[in-house]
Image (cartoon, rainbow, N blue to C red; front, side):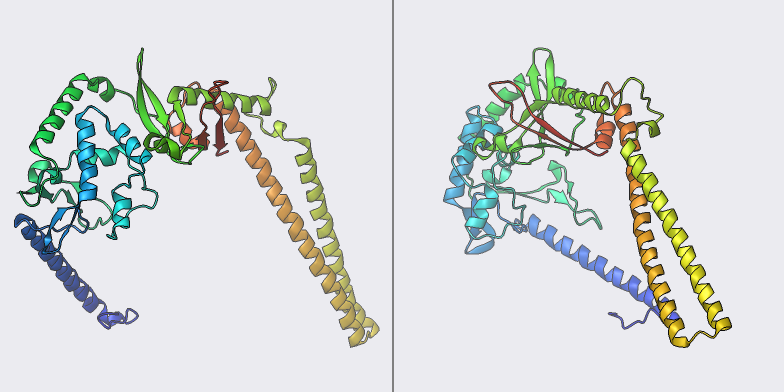
Length: 416
């Protein structure tokens, strides 16, 4: 009601449409002006972000600049030193977590700066280490305009090519010196010469997703690749254990082994629900006798109740006839009619409950038929894919392998 227009009045429809169009033009112009202002500030080397990069704090003399935070900067230098020395990002993250060093999110909260992030992101991760190692901010260069919000898509970001970033060289003090940068670039080049990128690139995608979790911490298992004698093998591992072994017992399993365990459990279910004489198409023959007996009992009970209701309705009609022919008093008539109606109401309530039980029982029998048909059909699967996993599995919780027995427990919750 900003324009004071009443939508129930048909005559002001065109005026409302014109006002809406004018308002849209105003918002578009306002958005363009804000974008142009922010772009100009970036070109002039002024910081337009809401959160400062890890390792820096605000400059009290200039809100558009920042200075080095000695505590966080020492962690950044250490990360670069470790990686330049040949230590991988996952190992660096695990080391920092074991030493209890707060990650950027936790450190910002501890130092009193506003940082909007998920409450679960309290540990260092390989992705966080990777972003620090590839952030030009630590070289003294301010990089802005790296992402764009598409028109009307407020919760999505679009990456901008690096050659289109707005860079301001020498904007702030560098945390990483030229010598450390040279050693880091050399380490990256040497690591890149020994990887098996082509084999990884041609590796088939995994078949499991968010349904597979760690039984200890409940986190979704992360997809990985383990190099075997026969080549790369798809694996699933606990991300919490990867970051910090002290926070979770962890779970590690190959996708091939998990697929085999699920198929084996499907065949066990099929053996429990069928024998050699049971075929997929005759589910009714596989219903348990007690369910069928209960169904027949409820059906008979409903029929008997309906007969009693019909008899009471006939008594009510006879009562009206008796009053008309025999001169029955109004008090006796009302009293008798009230008793009949109360009895009928009780019978109808009883019939409703029995009918509801019968309906639920029929649904249970139908669900059991579908369940058995699904199990018998799935038991013939030789391989799983994403579609079959999504159709059959609600969740899978993988436990840590027992080092003594070599066994590994897997808890499966089915959708059927």
